Image (cartoon, rainbow, N blue to C red; front, side, top):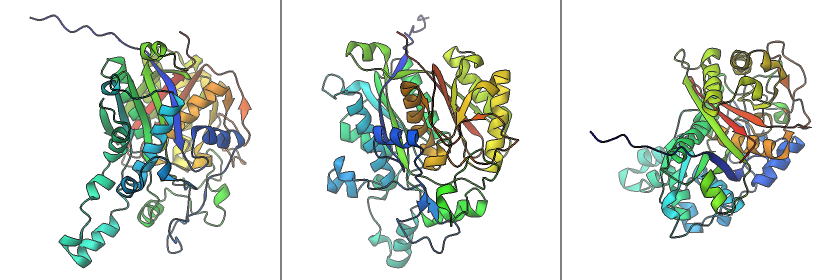
Length: 417
């Protein structure tokens, strides 16, 4: 019998970031928005929302896709994939990684997204009203979930793993974990990993509004997203993309890359309880597993970028989960929800929140939870209210919990060679 294959386990570091968000269309602009507590939520402008139950969202503003894609290609690319491509290309530039014939086979993409699942209605109406021969032949290549990773990979010309993840709102962090495993085991030397979403449509706002998940504070959009506040009434749907350039430590050092931090570990779990209601023990298990994967104790965590959606049930449940996972240390950890500024990007949330976590660690600054005015006794942890605070950070956790019970948590730490 052949001897089992022996693999080198590679450390994974972050060398580049890219972001397209409701509060900034580059990593630098996104961070400035986070640091200053900028609100990205307003009345929907991409269509007339007057007849919708929910009329507010976190839209990306002033996005110029032709900075990243030729006009012909852009027309055949769904908005979510445009965001993914832009954020991924930014991360490559930020990380100063050039694609060459020598390295293109070792670079890949892992992207989380829901694709254009809520934008299929107009195409279905064309079929109903005008028949089979009038249907757009490029629906799959424009709207399919695989095109977030596919378009970015093709634009860069990289031939490493190219994978799409969808585990509801845990997807973005799930993608980071998949990329972490691929690099650790030597299947790639560098991966662009994160999430992208563009699902602000009449159908999504109507369906999620009827479910009771979204805030209906249409008259005051600037204050509608208020995680952990006692008066929260639902989340705000957002759009955009956040992507990290991840590399093996050896690859990054060999090319002299600037290293933001290390992606120390990722943990996953499933609640196995309810289609919509979250479970604190399931969420805690993901955090505990992320700590174990990184070889860190609960006391090491300095800051948690919380899932913090601004729904009554989620914020209360996440508070309980943090207490279960971190024990007595839970009350000493700084917590904030950047969804207060961006809204909730669903499958893309873990992507932009990973970028927020990396930049918080890099800059030694905790972004605030804006609109936090009335503390909730059921959410009694150390929430950072309204104004960013400086902090000496070594370990940062980012939580992503999906509707239906998929959970993922990522642990970033200061790089120490």
